[in-house]
Image (cartoon, rainbow, N blue to C red; front, side):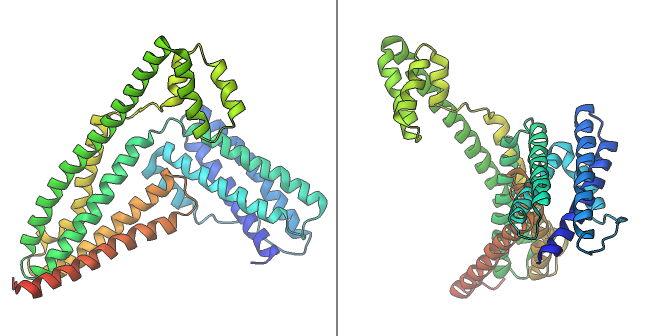
Length: 361
């Protein structure tokens, strides 16, 4: 893409962003967030004007009346995700803009005055990220992570199970569906127990380290300081800085303990419930066709793969948003391809089992 084509893209992006923030300001109920959106809309209008002038000075005509085709998509996303997750999506979008602008900042097509103005725009975009980032701190990603983990496992594992069984029991879809359901329930219980054990074990380990620090602090402060010094050095902090930190914290037992171990904020029971229920939610998509299509397992398998692919693409989008990834499309594609890949391998394995053991069902 040439420099002027990129500038046209920036112009349209900023115009759409202005419309989006104006819309969000109108529908947002919280005054604090509404004021942020109103300010962002004003700044995006200023950026739009810059790119319009930039292009006009070079004889490139662009429309000042644009129908924002993606606005309806963002409206739907905000409804589905809620304001907190949607703000994270906006933060990702702003981060992307900053990287693109910085790349363009070094282009020789810019005059020195335009470069200075673009520098201010980059500062504005970084401030956007900061303002939006303040709003997403309340989101509890540990539970989102548990739900994503459980649903993804339920989708992929049970899709693989019913795919393999479809190759063996080609004329008995009900058997395939029932077997997948039984395996899925057992898997959900296993996942829930695993999540509970993992969080609880980490909490117990951290409590043990804190108890040790309390003992050392009361019996031998020098040993406690040595423990903290080793921890700081292992993390890559220079020795002189580590020693200065240790000396300043030598009388603060809680501060020393908190530097040694990260507090586990997750609740093991919530983590187990989220993971187990998400696994059950995931298995519904690949299993349900087998209870409605009773003529052929292979026909049911087609619907199973389609339903699972749709669900995996949604999970991939949520993963991308929650992790602040820069590419939702690539993550969705990765999730779908990994699920279908597992299904293909399972079908091949089921076919081999059928041939080896002579099963004809």
